[in-house]
Amino acid sequence: MFRQNTPARRHGRLLAVILCLLAGFSPFSAQAADLVSDWFSGLESIQANFTQSVFDSAGEQMQHSQGQVWIQRPGRFRWDYRTPYRQLIVSDGTQLWTYDEDLEQATVKDLDAALSTTPALLLSGYRPLSEVMTWQSDGEAGGLAWYRLQPRQQDASVEKVRIGFDGRQLDTIEVVDGFGNHTRIRFADLQRNRKLDSGLFHLQLPEGTDIIGPGS
Image 1 (tube, rainbow, N blue to C red):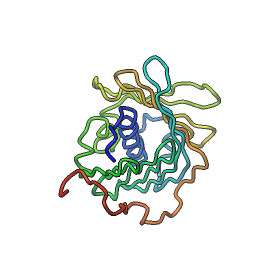
Image 2: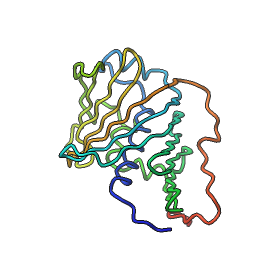
Image 3: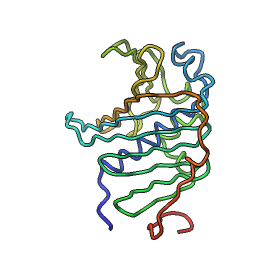
Image 4: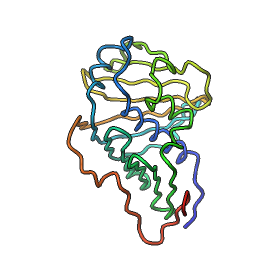
């Protein structure tokens, strides 16, 4: 089955990678807000349910999806999208896999190559955050305390990143790209630094899956 890969799918994949890498940050610089520094300092793992909504520049919803995420620093993660279609995005720390169940297709690339893209580089921790983004409190709205990251250099892929906290718990991450598309991910039942099964970060593909990438 080779149904066309839609822009919403591609956009969702990109943002999932970016957000996974967000959890791989080193502790923020001294200029960062204390709440954010405290939450990310010592972070080893995350397990949570999530909802993801993607809106175009006119505010029209393009996609709404739900699933579960596991992140193990450094560089290992699993985003399991369960609605409206099944998609897995998995990194074992060396390779990044994206599997579309209904397309019966998987793509694979070296994680280093994935991190070489500008959006990933901004959030990968390869360079100190203060070198690539400005950082500031963004007030309160909707019962959340917001903090904003902004790239220092103009980039078409990522214009703005905001994270919202409910009390002292991470609740929401929002990303706006240079075309005005807006992705919002909200977490529920988030567990921090829980011991995770290493098998989560190894993708087992069904026989007959079409694999696109190195060595395929």
